[in-house]
Length: 428
Image (cartoon, rainbow, N blue to C red; front, side):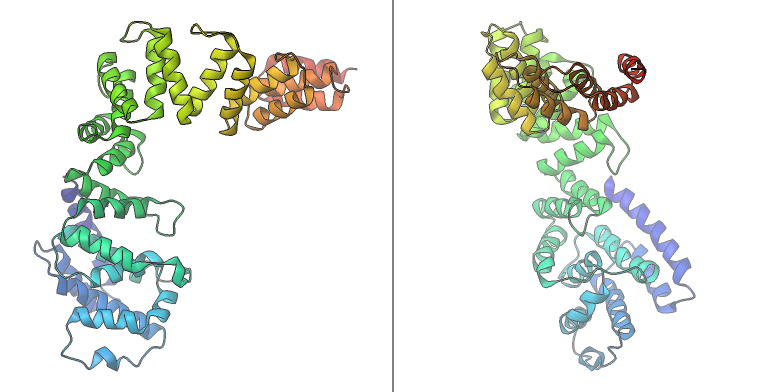
């Protein structure tokens, strides 16, 4: 299915390029038509790359091209690879990293199993050459680029249809912190790997369709992909599949099937699945209410590092819920663990605990510290509490200027009580 979409998109791109380069370069205008044929051989693609690399070198005043220009014995592939190796430093300065890697990858191919995908990459190179070449190029350092690794991955993905290599290429293009972040290319390689049964690719694609990343949001498609990956034992996919059953997203709500998949994911140490099982046991959703099972699920999830479970466990100990003895210190411990992961409600509750002296010791400074952490994250109630502390002057010197400031911020966030208090203080 995706290959059909990609083929259609390639045809549209080729037509657009023909119109752009018709008057600029008749050789390209003629040879670009080759890419629309059902059978495209590798030599045709490498001829196009060869012309681009030679054109770039001429633009860079590298006119002594006798190495390949007069050698009729070498194949087109050898010619391209010789140019790339001989003028590596020049080309690194002239070609953006993603395009540079593509040229190396395509030129290094020995056979063409996946035609449509490679044509798509050649078109990226041609489009850059004719449409975006004037854009500023980031100069590449040697340590910035391990193109040999990328060449090997590409060859495995294209020549052998290796799904692990296709998945890794998808990850490479999906890394937002890298220089080669290209969502469309990541989608292409994930789709190819997923179609051949790669569970990791199916899971990632499921996330794309669920969140509408690079594609239209489609819960039905997301569910299908999660299910395929989960049936292969993919734990995170199983958790997401369970979530969809739990919330009735894309499928009718079904707590029984949700529990089945949450149980599986939890057995594989997926902390979020443990947490949701806690909710199900606490509220009796699809299972008989079981406070002990709920507590144990929350605790295991919290110990695994899941922040929502850490916050929930803190509240359980503070309030003495789920048949647990009330224990302020344990509650404090888990709130602090959640706060370390920037849980805003944990910031607020820590501020409340210390400012009210719920531990037996009131510490206004700690209360202010945690309320400010919550306020800086946009918590309106924390702003209100800070206004109260500075207005009342309990445990800290009364400071009307600070009180008005925090009440004003709380009022801006929509708290009517704070707006009234601001007016009252301004009249003093």
